[in-house]
Image (cartoon, rainbow, N blue to C red):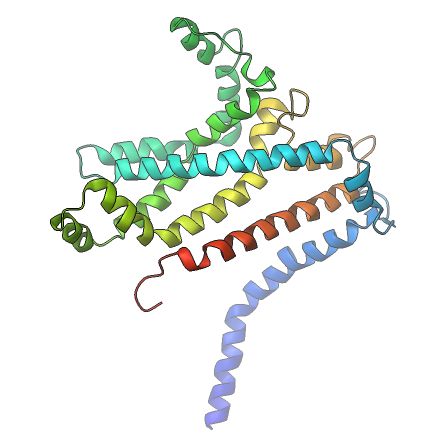
Length: 300
């Protein structure tokens, strides 16, 4: 009787998790396996795929004139955008974590860019950066400062996109805010009584205790940076030259930009897998480097 009940509970458990397993197999595992297969083929999405072995990867690493410049720009983008967004999000979280009048209004204002439609927001930024009529140059002119071509300048385009990214760090701010509010007030008060100033309390108590949140934010920001697409597609289209041609936009161009005449979905899929491996390697390295430096709480 005991075995029968145990078996019944096991079957019932499998019934509950089966929808998730089926969804995982259909929408994650199957697409990954088929995309891995197509990365070794010449495929345009319309006719049957032709097996070419490692030719896509060989061409990507040895003959594609835009791959290495695109990879360099992507790495540069990750290096500058991840710290910038994390610092901006943490700074805003510290500001709105105070018990001041109207703080909820400021939280809403800072979070608002996250819920606005990305296409509409980026189109607005495109007008802001317009070299002739844009608000950015109007403000610089009013301050008697030199104006800029912004998105038309190869040296300024990437920082201009970074400004857009930092402007929309509301989601990062909210996660940091949740971490800050989880820090026990008793510990802060005890440190204050012991003579620790605000800076020492923040660096010695708050930052170590929100270590897991910092780690989560770092992983999310890094993955988001490697997959940046909307800003480039709407604001610069990879230009000027290749100064903002991030890997995600290059993949889109190779696979879909010439879909009517010469689509290269097999080659684009190979690029996707290269990007996937890069992201996984960076993630593993970051986890190993920070594994023993993150506060896990009592009893961990």
